[in-house]
Image 1 (cartoon, rainbow, N blue to C red):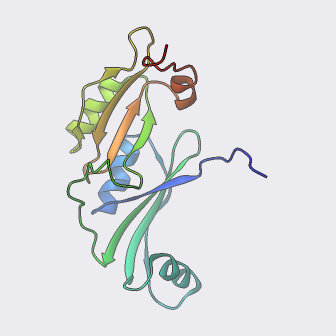
Image 2: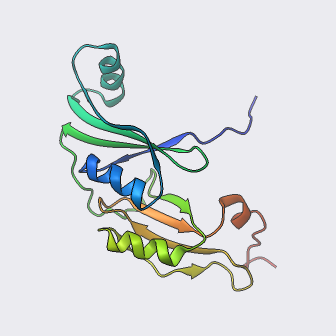
Length: 168
């Protein structure tokens, strides 16, 4: 039986987990559920789980867990063995996989400025999706090159009543 599932969390790799944890807390308003901890191949039960997930070559990482207002998790990772490297280009939207996360904030302009001032980047203008509706979006990136979309309204509210302008 298929049923509507809740979204649980997203995992994001960064090159400096301490700074990323502080940034996601201060700039995006996340709360820290579990501060950064070490996880490495040591034969323990947890080590066996992560070694199974990450496969051959995994030796050591740090991870942290953050939460958002509606309880969605953001799991941050920094790998040491193998070492985390920044993806180039970081906006490779035509490849499969997750290419951005999205946060909801009614004051898109202010959050985009805060992201840019804190070492991130505002990638696009703030756009009204349709001239007759109040829904706005803007694409930014965190200081580690991960793409962050800002939406003025929640996802369902924004897209539920969309009508294709190309269809009569």
